Image (cartoon, rainbow, N blue to C red; front, side, top):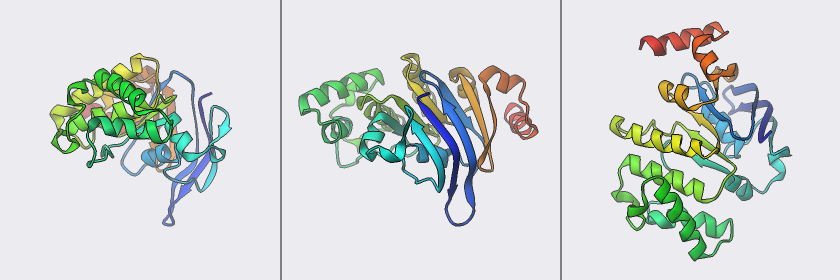
Amino acid sequence: MILSIKNLKKDFGYGEVLRDVNFEVEKGECVCVIGSSGSGKSTMLRCINLLETPTSGDIYFNDVDIKTINVNTLRSRIGMVFQSFNLFNNMNVIKNCTVGQIKVLKRNKEDAEIEALKELERVGMKDFAYKDIKTLSGGQKQRVAIARALSMNPEIMLFDEPTSALDPEMVGEVLNVIKQVKETGMTMVIVTHEMQFAREVSTRVVFMNDGVILEDLPTEEFFTNPKNERTKEFLKRYING
């Protein structure tokens, strides 16, 4: 099991955002996490690579408690793509994709650039390698962010609403890149509100509501035969909306 979450709770002081979350991901799986705003999806994702510190519970990565792993090492093994890109605006594209490799993985500049160019080519951004980040569109920035994460050669990729900050016409290009990454066998956990995409790309769908996981089913079963009434209500809105 590449990822295992046991009895995870997160309290920010105004109430529990996560309440006893249990969740596992096997190597090679693509799990989409869906649910209403405020259901705890992004907080769960941020706890996995310690961007948020769990209040209680345990998270294991390759059977090792993440609290015992150096945080930079952990984040190099668990890639993360944010809804707001989180790129360095004072660096060009290729520097964004090499800085982590050089500082954390201790690669030399030449090897880091070779790896970065390979991943930029994969996401269709190699021709922009020496462009200023500020000159890119939102869709281009998100593709660079994906390339940056992949340049660290992670074992699992987390995507936190990767299309929510994009103009509608840019959503498709980013979703297509994520599909291509999935084709390589990369293990992925994707928080998304793009239901059709979730149906197409995932092996499992997890539905969160009010800080707990209400449903965790293989994709087709989730969309055609959900067990929980709240899930049925959520999906009815999606299908009719």
